[in-house]
Length: 222
Image 1 (tube, helix red, strand yellow):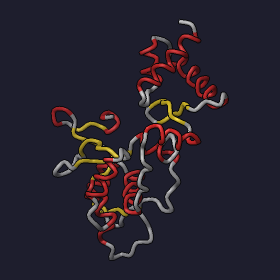
Image 2 (image 1 turned 60 degrees about the vertical axis):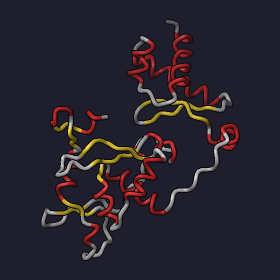
Image 3 (image 1 turned 90 degrees about the vertical axis):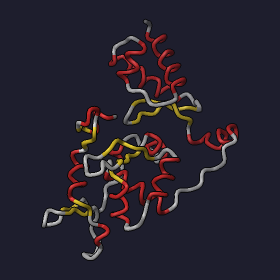
């Protein structure tokens, strides 16, 4: 297959699929080497960037995807007759930050950090497509875990979670070894902010219930 034909096929597949696709999958679809796909993707991205086109090729953690350029956002909204999205509330941003920096996490983890019921906020974020279920934690009751999505990355203009700004303080473990705290600056009596060690350990290992009842790493669930 000629490179020009392969690039055209690559563009067609990405446009039609409308979701991120990894280079390995694209190579399988086009029946060419993955290294060639990588070169063609970079070339296609440069073409979109420098030829004054209305779309761009972006790279996310899960693959490559076409997206409209932000400068044309208002025109696209008018064409689709989509009303301006309601800005996220402070509570929603707080919950989103907890999930983004600690994922995968259960709803009870979020509520222990915030000290208030967060079920409605989590449901709202899931409806907006910013968070999604990520299997079940290997804890009593098998609680559902949540993670951020590709829509979260696009919304905040980043390509991976590694680009999130650093926290002011890293998670700390209590000297007793029974609890850990996600933030500094909390009074000793703020018990709602203490996180059970068993969930902290489960999140670090990120083990979930797999087929047949076994536990498998989170990476293998995605």
